[in-house]
Image 1 (cartoon, one colour):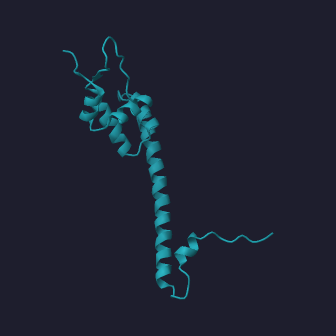
Image 2 (cartoon, rainbow, N blue to C red):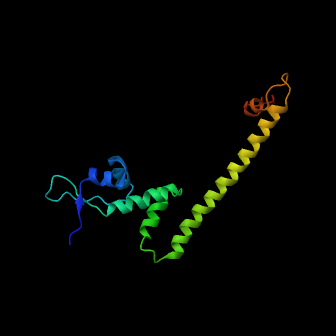
Image 3 (tube, one colour):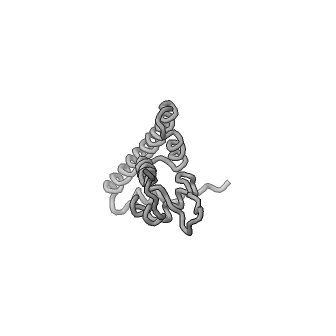
Length: 138
């Protein structure tokens, strides 16, 4: 039985994305570009909807499009070592960002508390921390 073919518009609607997203994924080589053949329009296999869902889910987990491309190339799932390496790299990036965000949160909390404790005559520690520091003349 032949796989159903659809236009780019129908593919985009079925995948709940816009046509520009499909074209962008094609430009990034995450989706194939079918030939026109003898037809006026390009027709896409409806199965590409699942591939678009895969890309969107991977993006939601924070994978870059380059990493998603790598995962798609490994999609057969037989090279689990390579798949784990991609996922571990992403996990390391996420953990690093979490550490940075934790430091920023703690610094901002401390500034808010210092501003709350400061007297009305003092300038706000938040503004002082954000203002450019005067450089000493050399």
